[in-house]
Length: 570
Image 1 (cartoon, helix red, strand yellow):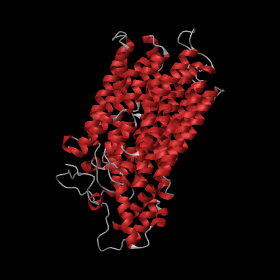
Image 2: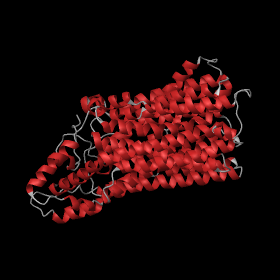
Image 3: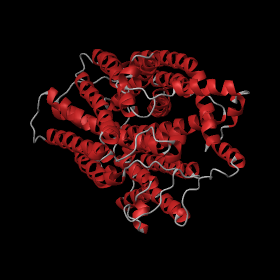
Image 4: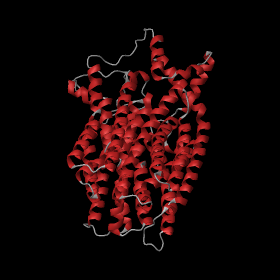
């Protein structure tokens, strides 16, 4: 049975010693550690971000079922609702990892997600092909809800497990998981373009199979390990480099495909290189195992001189600013410890919801995630209204996934680094990215040549940033024991905002502009007003995040101080 989060620091730092009961063989040690678990999570995430690919098959779904744009946006809303309402995933994760760990741990959560993924996409494929003949809209909404609802289960299992495994680098760990999730849409689209190019109906079948089978064989490796390794940051940086390399490769590939027509052999070669890059994190596991095969994690003995070690640890983590918060006398130290312990307690969902910070985080997320989903759900129709070709709109969908991924990874990594070095609270980054996002919406609204590309870059990066920053802030303010339930509850802000902005605003104005011209609108006016309104909404979200920043500024200073005390006691 796994230990709870109240384990002592000594237990958390204890090295893993191979024994007969734990499978002391070389291969067993290689696959049973936090690095193998991280790679398995990365590979699962690489095929789990399927909701972001809605633009690939939205047109064929709309035409095959004779939907209006408002109806299509309603179906997309249920997809978003499933993708963002992960309360059940959070409750299940807490149950199988903390309350009743003997039930199987994170793999149970992944299994539940895989089943929903197959049902959702396979039934949608049957609908588009006519095997299920024009079911009611409510039924299709249910199919898309299941398709989207699979992602929170995968995401919760992988993200929260990574937070447990890398407690000193939560922002980077979450950024890595969210980054690969963001890239998954572009990865799946590359597979689709190589095998089923020009047949979006087959894309639904591809997702139903790949995004189900892949998690099923990898879920056995995703586990929580309460161990610490001195070079964690170095190895995590290796995963980060892989994200950047894959993103750059995909951007180059997408641009190349938009310029020239590639032969089949060239597409196969490009896909093969991409899959090798996705597999490359395995090298980090092999390197870690090779470096540590003959030694356990080093922990200083009680009688050793730890002053030099403490200084090195602080330098490695970049916590230079904590020196400004050192107590000058014993009474001050005890008072600081008391206050810090109080603010860092683990809250349950009801306790978190009773705080002002929870609702500030919820409102800021509604503005950012809701407007981002509105762009994603309508990006194909925006391109069509501005005269973009089907290839160009498909390129926009693929690039959105990449910008989204870079935002998820970049926000986690940079906020982690600057928090450790400068002590700047993460909500400040939320405010900055939301303000930048409003610029992206304004660019899209302008309808200028190339503005859709530039606007989608800004909106995609900032949308991804919110998906990385929000769970990290939630874990720091409310604790990690119930993190899965709390951050998945806040994620509901996404579909709430999506309903108000995508269905009630964008869809309504589009259909009004298209009246008398069938279900299609052409011209800049189709989306101009709605996107200028969304620009204003994200500015409001930025102001809300600034309020959260001011309220939590002292709290983050106490976090840094607490970390310094923990390092000096080890």
